[in-house]
Image (cartoon, rainbow, N blue to C red; front, side, top):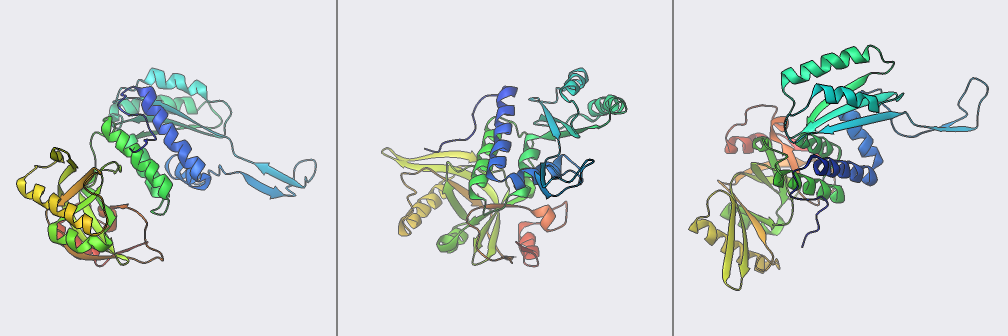
Length: 337
């Protein structure tokens, strides 16, 4: 059984906040450099330098000490809601949490962004407050999905431990309804195919351990030999396991048809050939409309060791994705690292 990092099935704000803070603390423990890159990219200006700085013979008013170790002071205050229920009076009271820090940020966190008129009222009062302060408070309104996306930007596919933590956080958010309107339509999840590649493409199916978390994505890319070699648009996700009473199926998305049942059975048989236990271990089967050949090359050394998410709108530089077969052709002209 998979051990989850984050509590499940609690809709209370304090649990959502605790889980998000746990995610950030895990990132800090994993890599303080990537944690501060995350803070700098999302919440602070380019002048923000939170890392500890070691200096030799730094001049001061009265002399030159042999060495100094310094760190800029900063404070982040977080207010979490389960929907857009932020109140200006409450947020203004939270400003008392700050003191003489050089950098101050207030984060309003919810499944959805704050309504424009509500945000405008609060930020006008915040502007008046900042006019009386030496250092200003920056307001960042974001979502649980936004936090996850920002962390995804600072880690890479070889950060195996942190990727697993992030996947579990996303899984928690989906289970507890903290990501309500997903932008899955623009994401392609790359999966390693290798020896099963030909079977996957011929059957338009891919399987993965059902306990492995994942962020919502509409497209599936199969990696083999330094390149994403096939892409398909997901039309169904079905969980299956063989029991004493026969096969047990659970349709997460799409219809459980007889044809799909037969494809799952063929996948189980194919797994047997390669030493994969798809019978007694519950697996999730991703069905695509059709896998199209592509050649989205990785130009840096070493093969990825796990999955990776690509934003196709960024890769293809468009806000409107074409048909899957056209995406496949366009990816042949792109590379990644």
